[in-house]
Amino acid sequence: MKLAIIGATGMAGSALYKESLSRGHEVTAIVRHKEKAVSLFGEDVKVIDKDIFELTRKDLEAFDVIINAFATAPDKAYLHLDLAAKLVAMFRETESPRLFFILGAASLLDENDNLFLETLKHFPEVESWISIPIEAYKTLNFLRSIENVNWVGVSPSANFVAGGATTPVIGKDHLLKSSSGESIVTSETMAIGILDEIEKPQFIRTRFTVCNQ
Amino acid sequence: MKLAIIGATGMAGSALYKESLSRGHEVTAIVRHKEKAVSLFGEDVKVIDKDIFELTRKDLEAFDVIINAFATAPDKAYLHLDLAAKLVAMFRETESPRLFFILGAASLLDENDNLFLETLKHFPEVESWISIPIEAYKTLNFLRSIENVNWVGVSPSANFVAGGATTPVIGKDHLLKSSSGESIVTSETMAIGILDEIEKPQFIRTRFTVCNQ
Image 1 (cartoon, rainbow over the protein chains, first blue to last red):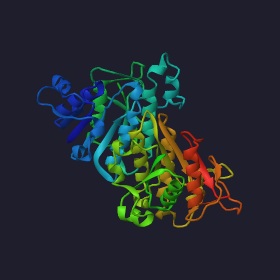
Image 2: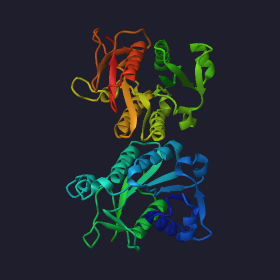
Image 3: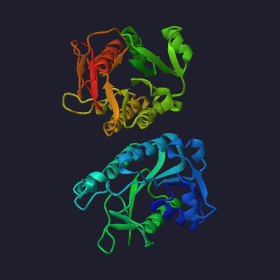
Image 4: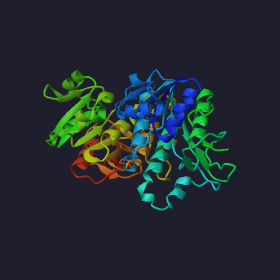
């Protein structure tokens, strides 16, 4: 399939890029700095190096799936919602490309059905980063209101860290725990969970979550 | 003040255009068809005739207030949300222009605190038009999540019809009734309510409603 990854040089994006290539997909990295993509993925990397807010429908319409692994600084966290709204507006009333959003864990529910975001708000030094989970949660709520766009969201587990693959455990709206008892997913496990969903779609206009085994 | 009206040739927009001019503001009509604006407002009308989704920040940044009186067919009702998201993304982290959204009455509460949208859903032949109030309600919910844009929303009363001015009665989140017992606002009363709010802002990042006296 023809895949595009927004933010391909980040932790999530680079694992996705490698997993996509290893499965034989045709992958394009959408990045701010081409040099970083070349240094990570080699000279053959296909790149669109353009500010994401300058992307046009023409740049993106030929892809089967656009994976949004965009990351930004906390003081610009609202760009997550703006980018989602831009992509949604671009692909109304069509099934392709499918829009795949990486959304953060804050919108998941804990074992008492409480929003994990509320727990996060009591973490230390929360002011410096809480805007990111807040805007990711707004983005999911925005997407949930969208009926004529082919979107899907994925939340990592509570801890989303760089690391090797395990067999992904898939859930829906609740925080999962791995066999170690920790709610954790590594970037390579996440990439497998996402590519599995791309190849065999099971979650249509909804959100799922991935955890390490 | 420098005002722009998106959809200036519609029922709400044309009353707003005339009220703005009569108060001495510098008004620009943003319309699809310049001829229609000229035939309604005369040769001197200032026009931006451009598809609203092609508007750039540069086209709009010099205005003090942008009034969004955009209207569309029910099968394209989602464009209300897309346009709001586009305007919001354009004017993050700034107080000017102020973005003024006309939102419909469905998001108001009735005397039992029930959402008027739920009542509307039981109206006859509702399938042919319910998408408009649904998307307007989504738009308000979207706006309510936006903290770093200078936005305001206004809902008409249950019946929003072309007609002459009365003294506007202003409310917040509940459907109002005029002295006749009917929840009705005329286009000229609505225009007065909106211009009053533009000249003396009282509702910041929230929604208010206007009713005939």
